[in-house]
Length: 130
Image (cartoon, rainbow, N blue to C red; front, side, top):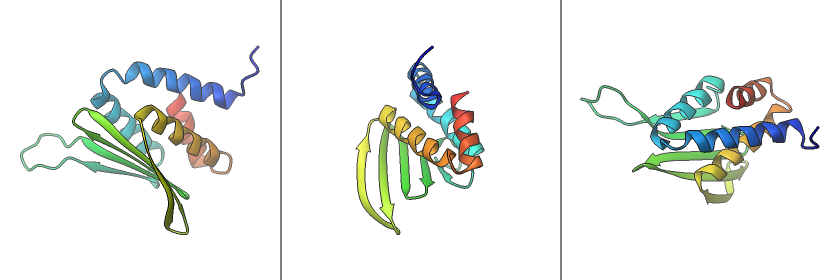
């Protein structure tokens, strides 16, 4: 048996599956956006590409507002630009640029923290991990 807590095992398993799925970042980004929005519609905002003559409007930016944490990921030119900001009473006190893997881990950490007190966040974390 392992001495790693179950939640950390879940995070590690998700991180491993995300590395495998990230070979086509555009598809992965769309799937992640949909899963996050379906699991937590109240705290996730999706910005979509515009265009009058486009058949579909893929997601170009994901914003997750979880308490004092704001996590943003934007798909631009085949890469993901990611940022994690922390605000206190509406004022951003810290903001950092992250690579996409680090952003995903930060997102999972925020969800894990919220899952301890919120059934919605707990369900979202389970939906991402399974």
